[in-house]
Length: 105
Image (cartoon, rainbow, N blue to C red; front, side, top):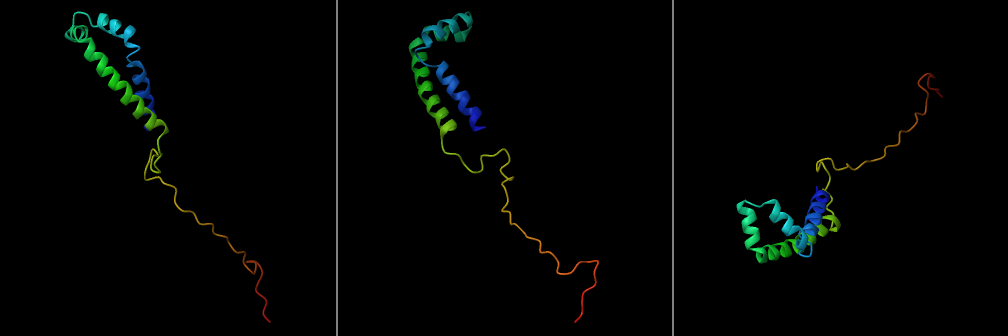
């Protein structure tokens, strides 16, 4: 789950990079033309650039932490499925065969 979140944050962080907004913001505004959100984006481009810059930095930092940060031991799909301590038991061979009677001295 950490890997999926890390990849999603990293990709969306790169898409929200302020240097990409020169191309993506006009496309987004034209896609949302005639809506309240499109009107807000076109009137508040400075706020959009500031928010995208903050999201860019935070998303890349969190994405890198999720992808390359310290791993926890219980990061498995099933935290209760931790491997149990195994002991090796050596089975001793019997002194006498089961088919042969024991010798008496």
